[in-house]
Image 1: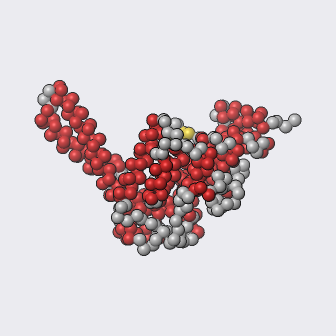
Image 2 (image 1 turned 90 degrees about the horizontal axis):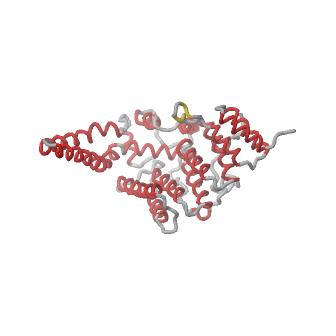
Image 3 (image 1 turned 60 degrees about the vertical axis):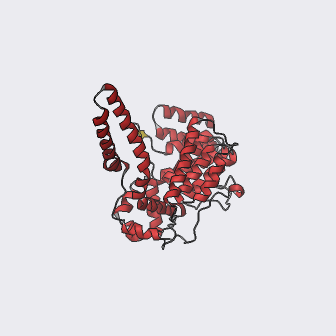
Length: 355
């Protein structure tokens, strides 16, 4: 007699416990074939499709692994919309690994339909809109994020809310003169990117050693000369140096962003390409040190998608604008009903049960 879905799922859990992820994945696939509404089984398919941790470090999934896991997660949230772990993992895969930022906005809006007073979906949507440079839309979402009706009592959540507000303010100030729209090939920022394409972005570590550390050293040396002869003086100098490091790091963070503005602009252009499946970056920039360094910081799956997008050669329309949150008319099951918000038939359409 054939096993039931529950017994097959128990086989999957036993295989995972013994360290055999391949057998666990196989059993999870059998589970959902027997019972397509088994949400735990679909979650197992998603988790075990992704690479395991190796020596405490998570290997990054490739394009096929990310797409199959994402397809399984769509099944999970369709069956069990309360499963926040599935929403969280799906958001990471869509935005960080597949680069599908517009789909990421819609994904988190679908979560908002399930949990309208939860702060995480708003925070994630704001983060996506900042990356694309849509600060006015961010402002309306921030106002909603800090409204009294939102459920934010956890200290970590409150800290994240403040962090995202500062992030939006900092990004808006950096682009207060001109917001880079990569879909416009005549935007003046493209001239700057072209001029600086041979210069890699300055890393925070390099900035620390070249700017922050020398300033702290000079101030610390001066403090030691003035008050370092006694025990209490040494304690004061230590605290002074620590305070100087924190203050200088905060004050110079905007300088680091200005130094890397060309790289941040190119980052946005890459986001636009992976969000739309169409190209906007000039060939002269795509072969540069800056482009190689910028894509080198992205996930393997995203870079695989980017290569396919470049090969297609479809141009990004100059009037393109991402679907910002006029979310009230959006169906919370946009991935299954063929509605206007449905993503393009790209990675997420792979069958998660294929071997």
